[in-house]
Length: 369
Ligand SMILES: *Cc1c(COP(=O)(O)O)cnc(C)c1O
Image 1: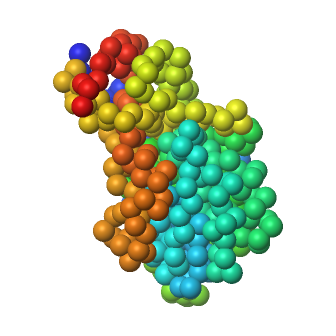
Image 2: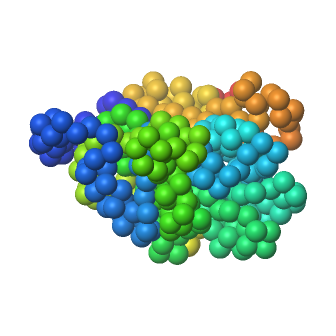
């Protein structure tokens, strides 16, 4: 049997007619930028998250950057970020001229460890940029409490958490503002690049809206040095179709994840831990093993696709050598980079495919190296 790491096939088959009808409709309208479709999507997505405002933009990296710009974070400032995340989280900080300051995660949940945040706060710290990594929410009450004590903004990187809940509240509504990505493989994905900022802060929403469009609040009137990072009508239309199916898509991912959690029984594999206060949307099913290379090769030989999220910790990337953080200084992030491997989990995976993955994982006998 062949089980790819991800396949869009079953989802795309199911929504094909709705997507093509939407495209047909928009193609005839001759209105491609900043029109009614974007407005409707923004309203619907804010409402889905339980927040007041959503502003569409070009991608998830821009969403985070625009929030930081909106809060006037700039050169000389510091922003706390987890040491184990996709590099875009840190890049958003770097683009403002501010410095990303890494805090290690809890290795069981992969979420930023709130106990380690305070020791990294300085006079220059302006915000805590948390990541709801792999689809689980960060430990928000503790983080919000620290932010309040030091007067910091809390920004959510919710690129992997569309619909994820913390104590019943959805990502996007757990801090001051949240950045979402709609990269095609995210739980809510466009058919191309797209992103959004979600917030209850009306001032920030208006500012971000202007920043996405050259800093213009009305035509040819520029109040900020903005960028061009707009969500377009066609992607907004596709996103509206997919948003109407999101809960159903997430529900099926949860069913698959629960099978993995209960049926994978392999003493060389550590499964992810989920806090009781968190309802993840299973963007990624991340396990760990000290014999990763052997495990990945074995699964490949058995037709099972895997991906490593992410093989090089950010502080060890060449792009960040200017931070002068040496190997060994962020050992938890490094351990996750060395041991993490993600199993296939996608909408439309059949029961047979899920059982096959479980069976093969359980049957693995690592070569003693
Ligand atoms: C995907 C992702 C981003 C960036 O989103 P893009 O739309 O690709 O720019 C940022 N942070 C995390 C955690 C992501 O997974």
